[in-house]
Length: 607
Image 1 (cartoon, helix red, strand yellow):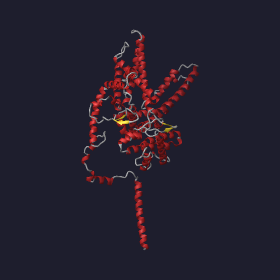
Image 2 (spheres, one colour):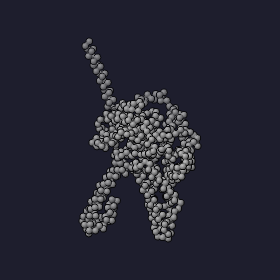
Image 3 (spheres, helix red, strand yellow):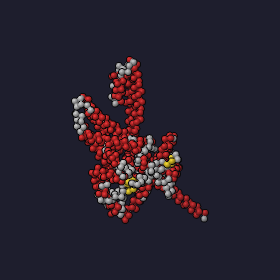
């Protein structure tokens, strides 16, 4: 069944600005898409009329999701609307999940139907042989359906699967091919229509200078590389600033650069929030917001210190406070790197596990807060009863925190409202250390097991989400923070009076200069890739094909001439049918033969 984390909510990610989103239209009328959704809903309900084991639906060669069911799903859209079938299945998956929340008494059945929608969608994606049709029409074309009499915002299958966290669909081969093409920048949004994705026409061009195009920085992998590079520089600046304390309170070069970088990152976060709204807010936004807040406060303390005389004690105090605050956030600086390393499988899988474990720990912290408030009120009540004055609150809070941190102190409570104080503290320690912490361990263990069983698909889902977050509208210039400060200056000085074409040309020249080191590396890599693409096309293979060890001499072996194919066919097991079914079929044929023989014998005796 769907795990608990899948039912929390959908994380809607705005991938294009509002002014572009308003111009998007569904490739098929929303009314027709809704009809396809309803046909598929009825199909899934008929195929899964009652609760059953999930394995019966998800196993390969399932007796529930048969070839006939897949063919019926294809026919739900007819010949003219078949491209929206996969999208409609994801819509139904969303409907069934919501129905599971609304009707808890049938949650198991609805979750199973939602899972069946994912199984059918994955099978349809992987059975499509026409790669161009699959990528451009099925996966990347935008569709919408009718809700409350109005069409929803058009989205494509790639976005919808990420929004729904449909790991089964995301883990399909066709979906991953599309994500790979988007990540490499082989599929880009059309400059004239943001709803349409087109092939990058120069991916097979071996000319080095053709790839020295600043527009190539729109490719997610180059944006990710640039962000990682700027993050490392940011960390290096922080290290230099914290290791070169200026006793006089002045700014050195590393500190100035550090605060400029921080300003760029803050502007980037504010711009994202302004364009996409609260939907983009997540853990890393809160984490970065807290980090930048500490740095901003440190900067303010530094400025306050500089406002006093050099020999003033206030200047020394505020300068020391500023550096102490910077030193305090060192773990956050290093942890921030994880945000840009999640494209690597090791770090990505680890972040997925941590994310789920943190979600599960919310139950523990909710219980902990309630327990703390209850016992705190009890201790304060005992304190007031003893001498009508609340004077032991710091001692009470410190003792409770020590108990939570596994180091309780009972000595102080021997004289606190004896004997009720020490009894109450024993009870608090027992509840926290024995009950709540074991609940936390059990939650972490459950979360880890859920992720471990599906680690590959969870990483692919994380990577798909990261890729789609990099997809920008074609009319946006890619100034990666802190270079966005340059964009702000250029925009403020020139955008209001320069013609649009001249403004775009100016931005291209500026980006070409700023990204020139990265563009040289990107052009070198793409030139090598172009040669490989041409070699693959000459062999009749896919553009991204890689010749593995077992394929290098495969063309020199003729299995059919050697008779090896017949040998393998003779020993190949039947994985589509159970052994018991095969035995019953064999027995049935033997019974039929026996009946025929008996009939013949009876007829012979009569004659």
